[in-house]
Amino acid sequence: MPIVRWDPFRDFGFTAPSTFMPPIDIFQTGDHELVLKAELPAMSRDDIDINIENFVLTIKGEKKAPTEVKDDQYHHIERRYGSFSRSFSLPQTVDPNRVSAEYKDGVLAVRIPLREEAKPRTIKVDVAA
Image (cartoon, rainbow, N blue to C red; front, side, top):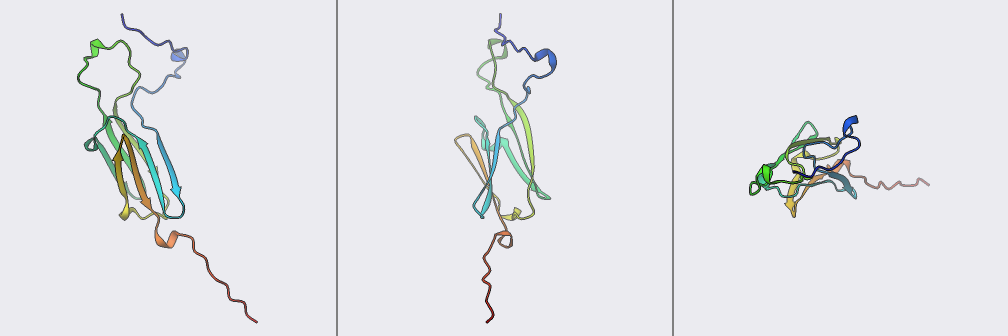
């Protein structure tokens, strides 16, 4: 008999999603770039697709369930598997032509540089005598 976790909110529709949805952080490093970091453990680079179109960044992928264990052998499953897609609107100040991505230790880092004209600059004011 499999062990089932008791969920008091199951009957009210407040259960956790049944599909994999990676957690993502987006932050800005000074005045140079936006950085998006996504936790994508146990995925290969071939399972991840990144696309930018009309200032919308989309990350798609699939986290595959392990094949060494058969479904009828599981007693309890909490980790999520399956396809996912996350989209984020980017500001018009980014340069979509210079985006780079790196996947290391289960973390995808997408770096989106800001355009030169969008970076703040100091303007010297001359004082007239």
